[in-house]
Length: 215
Picture 1 (cartoon, rainbow, N blue to C red):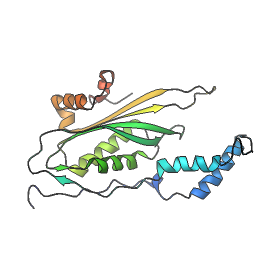
Picture 2 (picture 1 turned 90 degrees about the horizontal axis):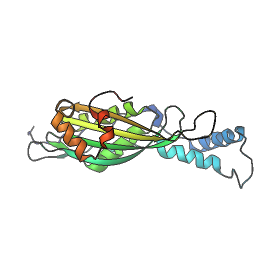
Picture 3 (picture 1 turned 180 degrees about the vertical axis):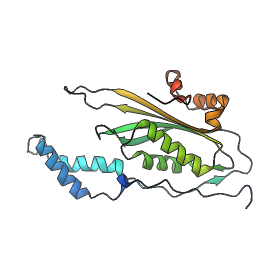
Picture 4 (picture 1 turned 30 degrees about the vertical axis):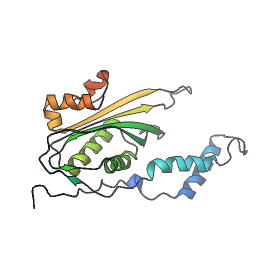
């Protein structure tokens, strides 16, 4: 095989939580769930809320793994490839409410680069099941590292939790940040600093990207 041959990475690992969705059954269960919570049974208040609730969760969970694809480089890698923002949908692991996550990605390729849409689709697929922000960052970094055979990978994920706090209805408005560093991005402070700069990670969050476990 030529040293510059294109190696096609495997698709992201499937997750049982993102299997086939029975939208009709989900909508029926959601309607019963809302009724059990005491939501008034009239069109002006509830209407098709069961269907809308089911579709909201299906939108997050019913993602498909993208086809594997890479574009090979004509020379050895050496420059960081950076994707400064990928918006992901996921579920809060504690309350199972839909939340939005922002992923910042950088990797140091060998001879392979993956098209940005493929990376974005793969990360949306991996983000779908409920999971901690630290586990999500790790899954994204592990897939990208394996898919591109990169010298190093850095992924940071920021989530905004607006889950209700007991006993009142006020929102928590908590920001969680997780990171995963692989290879030379983890081991070389200069490369790590360059990645932080290129992905515009705020200085107040850079401590989370130094290889320490996020709190």
